[in-house]
Length: 118
Image 1 (cartoon, helix red, strand yellow):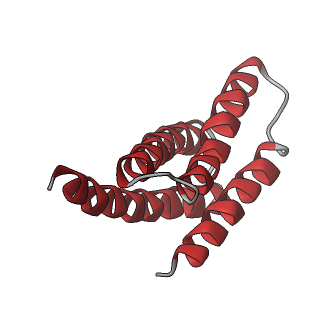
Image 2: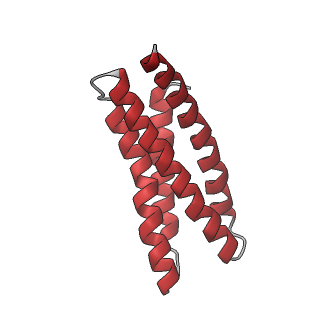
Image 3: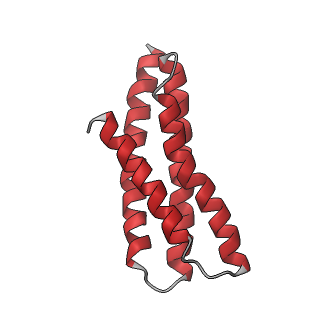
């Protein structure tokens, strides 16, 4: 996968989450979930974008590590949404996509952090 493909995929993921969150009911629990998932889902791509301008391998590794943490948090909120709401095919797709993104970002981080240790 080319990095531009990953950047595009992270962007589309963030935009998709934003659009789906707009459909939530206006209840207290969904307000909390909305706030949390919007922060984490958009942070994944933003930190990966920052990584593209890294000044060193260590800087790149750090930014990608933050992206990994944020996609893990996003996945957590998606699993909560899927647990408390009626089956929603879009959120199920987001759960699968977040798992794939977690694996991709984790792999990138592992490879780069090994280079930094050498």
